[in-house]
Image 1 (spheres, rainbow, N blue to C red):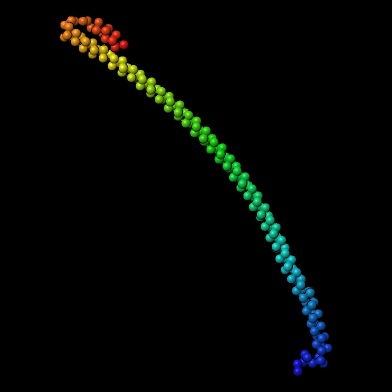
Image 2: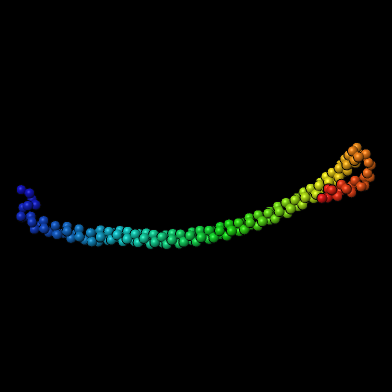
Length: 162
């Protein structure tokens, strides 16, 4: 039979079991539980610190997001202002160019009109001279009369003036 099942040894086994249990209880109570409690407290404080850091980072991210949004708004406003200014400058330049072009065009038109008038006057004089010469030649050949060139010019100028 097994010695642990022998009733004669129950008292000594119970005593040693009580001594072992108390020794184990004291060891666990004095060493294991404080170590476990320290580990749990350390983990709890790490978790709490991580949560605090996470909240701080979240707040910082929110603050940075607000700064970015305000910077974007500011940049958008500046861009719109610059665009409006550039558009206004472009309109002014266009107006200046139109004014300059109109002035150059009017000057060129005036020059061309003057040149055309001069050419017209020269042509009219040449026509008057040619017609006067032709008239003189025609009158001499057809009528056989000699008319003064002064009379022919007056009549030709009067006819061309009409």
